[in-house]
Figure 1: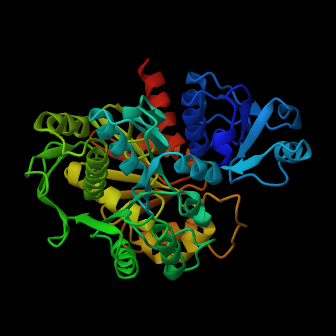
Figure 2: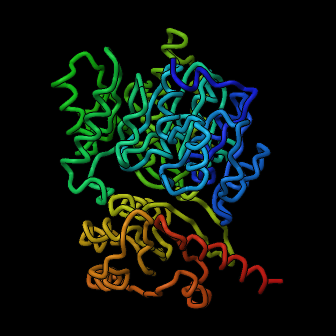
Length: 480
């Protein structure tokens, strides 16, 4: 019996670093399960503050006084360790401690669980999966890595406790804590270079995770992604008991995407396994269609397990409607606002592949508009390792605004690499590039530079998203 099974709902669970996206989602989940939750973090305001407030959790600032004997468990973010005063106090009082990935793993042991993993596409795939499961009235709980519009702008859909579907993270092999019966694998390629120095090392982690599947487990993977295909082929060879289903635009995929076209900022497609019904989705990029396809397949497996049947025609119509209404996740091609026919979006894309695909998706949606991409690279190690890929990732942008590198707390500044060097490299590919060390320094320039019909996308895992909200504030004040 694991720690979760022993928890009493008469006592509190305290969460250290509760404002993090994963921690906030876990707090929501545990709240829905009937637990009393308290939490702490820095004083900085995050979008998760609003989510926590909805469930009456007001985070305190880190302090050892937050920890007392009324607390039966302390869950901590992987961003915090031995030096945190609350973790120190919990150890002193001998209160059990669990990291976020350890706790998620324990939850997965208590019900039939599915994991959505991959270097790209996890959050959107998880959000679409939950939207479809909700339409099918499946008794699932879904935990995503960001706020999902279809989840009432929360990170959790709690429609039952029979099945758990969770976004799982490969960083530092965190997903190895999870115990899935089904895995969706969207993509595998080099990333998190501070932990995985090369492709072989990250590939090994994904293989190790897929090998955790139980006897006759299920692997759903994207055949259009070379890394996912590589991992799946290894699993097929070494674990023939696992049922492997591929999806993609590839003609050899088990679930093939057909009849694809774009019309009026909406992507339309069919699947060879679903009577070629026409689905549509209103978020850009062919990768979004791949994510939607993975979500459809996963729901089909869970529906079959739950009802020993396939969805009815009426249910499929409901699914088609749910997918057509899906409007994305926080910081995933997120619509921020519009002024004077200048439209602003924000996207978390911080890997060259994600950047390339996302910008191409926007260009396909808005072929006649000027695309201005404001980018802030995230981590010195990633920028250095993928420098050339970053330089060529903006081919479908008309103008690029660049900034300093958004450093990670987990690495030291590297004087060999900088945002200015990256900006110069992007310019050498023929792009028009403007550089501002600090993101908000670009606001006065953009106020005058942007014109009617422009699409501005702030991209990256840094804090340049603030540009969009600041511009809208300025324009709103000027209008008044």
